[in-house]
Image (cartoon, rainbow, N blue to C red):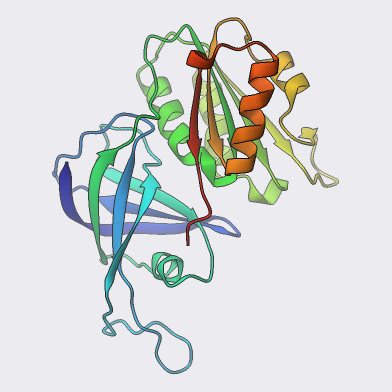
Length: 246
């Protein structure tokens, strides 16, 4: 397992609640499969008077597991998280260019099967990160594999990587992206509701797809049961729980 100290080269708010960081590999080797995760260790900076983060107010190091949100064979690693009031998440959001982050990995078996006949991703919210890695990889490698992504979010403003996913769909003739939100607005023309049996039957290949489910535990369990009611064999269902870590 590789253990690297990498520098932040970019950070951005992907949605009003989701922060992304990009770390420069700077020639270091970090070999991973699309969909795997790593341990990301940050120094928990101390808050000084006025509520700002003290640049020199060093604190303890703390790590959390994050799916690697980009495809392999790049010069960087990307990680994303939804903001919260925990000290770790505050430190994550406060990262700036030049800060050091420790990364250990890769870990996990929620990975793309390159010889699958066809694939359907079922994702919710920040659970898109390992799937983004797999979709990027499949597109870059021009895999001859039909792929459907059913992506559920609360509202249109909270769809992470929407522009990129829609762009990948144009690049990859084998990729179909279906967005569904629980709260639409006047400009939204896509599906409204939740990912359910009807949506799955209408947009995926029940008899051949390998299904990858990633998101909050309740969503993962519910969709796993839905697939079983549709007679999808258990060996064609792969799951990854995104628990509410802080």
